[in-house]
Length: 113
Image 1 (cartoon, rainbow, N blue to C red):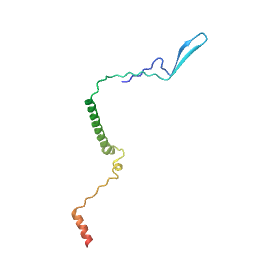
Image 2 (cartoon, rainbow, N blue to C red):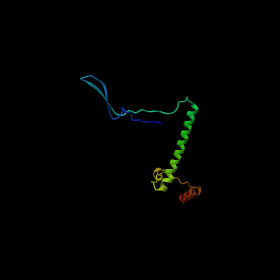
Image 3 (cartoon, rainbow, N blue to C red):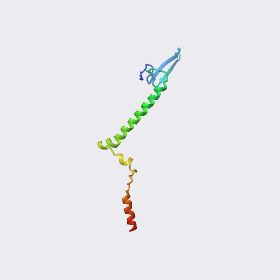
Image 4 (cartoon, rainbow, N blue to C red):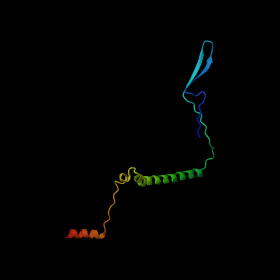
């Protein structure tokens, strides 16, 4: 957690008297903001098992999220009225028709006649 507090001497423009004499006064002017960050939490020893567990968990979550997004883009979005990306993505994919042996024999017979 990060807490930001506005400090008394950290406004946009703050003037501070550095020194003064009877005839002269020295003033320092601050411009900008001053942030004080407070970090909460605890530090523990390094653990390979926890690191590996976090990596596996995050990759698994990434896989689930990508599957859900694929489902949304291919099925749900076209149903709701969003553009159908299936035609754009799969426009270069063609299905080759398998010809049966009988059709090939018929073609050969026609060539012979």
